[in-house]
Image (cartoon, rainbow over all chains, first blue to last red; front, side):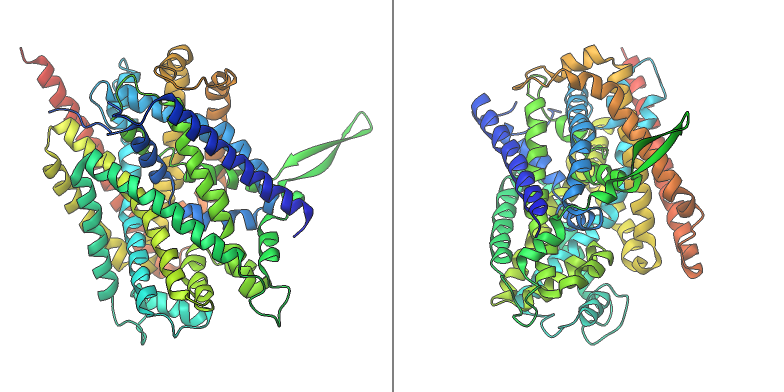
Length: 37
Length: 533
């Protein structure tokens, strides 16, 4: 695996994980998981 | 009749994520990456996510919640509320029921194979198939395409189809909260756990065959992720006033492949997000919920999907993986992966985890494909859920048999082309124009931010209005130019299958006409009700 491959692998993982964690934290902080309606 | 609602904010996010996370995340994505530049493919992929995927996600969540406020769960009614001066716009909304309906017809049959293979993994039914050829023969026997020692006829496949079909209807019958939401709330965490277990197993494969030291998991990851920049575009030269001016021209095939992958993976353009979002209340957030569902889908696709089939296949089959991947996603899932798991200790258990993961991904998607048609019957004809499901179930059950009995005649590919390639893009383009131009960007932007837990960057006003529709129009033109003529003229279809393909086309046309008539009837009915004192 080339350095370029490692960079793309790690960057893609970090980006997607970072987005997911950001969204999850904001969702949990915004409202408790009570009824949506 | 009181309108159904989601039970919790996390429930609706999981339901939309469940709809988005499908077989394509684990089978289609890695093949696309491997065939379109490896890691470099992530550049057009991210561009498409930002300019096409996320805007469409927000558009659909917003239109869905807005239309739900008027008692509509499907596109015909929603489009009418966005442009009530145009009496024909509701007929464009028919695509939002037609697309998921016809995809459901074949998707549920493929989903049933996964249940079947989960069972075969437990019982070890395919354990004596040790080569690509014998595993392909096993699959062909199961599909009824060949009589062989493994299967004689379609009986086994049909049994698993009946179980899968029944399970889908049961979830749908239980309703939005107790059925769809509950299935996704339990199914998605299980899917991520299974994905994590399989990732650990694949990453610890090392060098399975010491006699072929190059066939190892690191090189497998490299096969998928090493960037090949040359496929993204090429450098040319213009001669301007005698001087040579360099320019860079993108490779349309790769950029369209990335846009297509984003389109399919996020379940945008199907009409299913519209229906799911219609069960929100007018004050529920859509901006953050849409982004969260997209993020969950991306984790499943890029991290789990990018770590399983191709790296594992490379560790066992080395350079032949390129040929295997070219054989298609089904080949990887149903032929290569069982062979890979067979060579591991506890292979049957890992095989079960693999097929169960795909089955969960499939069923959380198929229930979302069914919901628009059922919701349309409930909303527009005041049918009870039981009545709507009986009508939907009867019709789809009959239609599924076309796919089951004529699978090897090109029927599935034909439905896939019209249901996915054409309908999704056209529907996405129509709803984007309605949202950004007809309803108006100012009103749409305000509607999007009602109850919002995040503020979307202002640049997206411009992206939604200009860039996304332009992107979609280019996609549609290129696809029609690249594939349209050959598909319409059946150029790649063997002469003996042309009758079947033509028959499928007429069947799809009949379904479209029927749905259009139903929309017309629904509005006549609505007008009569409104005219009553």
